[in-house]
Length: 233
Image (cartoon, rainbow, N blue to C red; front, side):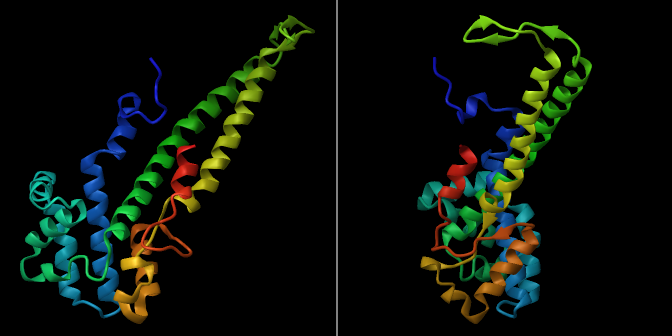
C-alpha cells in the first residue's frame, strides 16, 4: 500500500497535535485576540473591548464551535459567533473589519511555524548523531562501489559525513522557508484593507507582532499558495 507523505495517519504525535482541530481553533482565537488588541492600539475599538475579547478566547470550546457550524455551515463564522457569545456586549467588536481568510491563512502560518520548529529539532538531532558517527568511524574502512561494482576502499566516516552535510542543508532550507511560509495577513475583503481605514497597514503589522510572525508583502484576501506548496515539498 502506498503511503502518502502528508497522510495524517502516519504523522508523529507531536505533528498530529499541531494540525489537530483543537490546535486550529486555538490558533484562530489567538489571531482574533491579536486583531482586537491591534485595533484597540490604533483607536478603532475600545481598549476594554479588546481586553474582554482576548480574555474570552480561552473560554471558547471546540464542541460549541462545531455545534454552531452544523447550524450555519460556515467554519469561520462559527468561531466568531462562539467567541462573541463569551464577550456579551463586546462581541460586536470580534472580527471587526476582517475577512475569513485573514484568520484562516494566518492560523495556517502559525501552524506551519510550529511544524517547522518540530522538524528543526528532529533534523538537528539527526545531524548531531551523524556527525558523531562520522567522527567515530573516520578510519573505519568499508567497501566503496562504482557502477554497482566493488571499488577502492572508503570509510564509514565519509558516508556519515555526506549524510550529515545533507541534514545541515535541510536545516538551512527550514530557516530560509520560515519567513516565506510562516506568515500572516490582515487585509479584509478582497485584500484592500479598506475596512480598516487608513490604519490597515499598521493593524496588520501589529497583529503579526503580537503573534510573533512576519506579514505578507502584498496579497489579496488569500495568501498565495505557493508559500504552502514550498513547505509541503
